[in-house]
Image 1 (cartoon, helix red, strand yellow):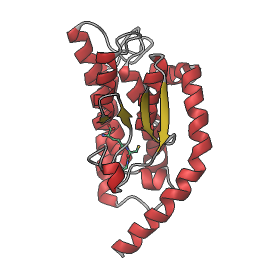
Image 2: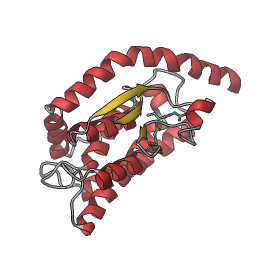
Image 3: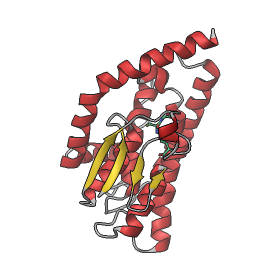
Image 4: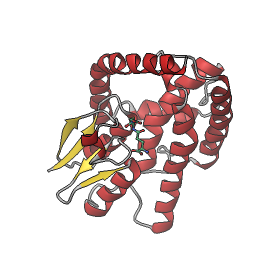
Length: 228
Ligand SMILES: N[C@@H](CCC(=O)N[C@@H](CS)C(=O)NCC(=O)O)C(=O)O
């Protein structure tokens, strides 16, 4: 049986969890947090989650896990069969990860965890990068109704679990709704919110979030003290 390591408040964990649910693959969840503990580093070199345990060993990095799942379990595919179309889908997923999720992430301590204010230079860079990231999404995505066309794909996983957080960053730090002129993107978020698997993941996340905040807030304060 596949085992998925991570925690319910992690957006990357939830991308893989939704993929497993949509592909109707049975799996066990092993609750762990990303960190630098030796036992985590032994199965994920950078100490990040999610991690997938297979009968052959461990796989880390969300996109690599998703590619593995498609290779080994092609039923209920989340990428197109045609290599060119598949490349388009992965490009969308990658652009959302690199140019939306990652810049937004640099502001999560302030916006999501309620911690220290984002350093000004970092905030300014995140603001510039997010504008370009959403412009790229607007140019490339189809929203007909899914991000890459008529089928639900891995691009929707990245969209669903990145854009919500980036939007919070935009609203709170830059008084901007990045989806204001993208009604089809907003409609897709509303459509995905009706998916029972997405609803189950949201419930799990909401249940875990308070404990997760308790866990990260003291660490954030410790980092502040270190930097003082
Ligand atoms: N590039 C990684 C990112 C995963 C990631 O950032 N995971 C976070 C939780 S959402 C984590 O494990 N953070 C712990 C750390 O950075 O030490 C992936 O695609 O899986």
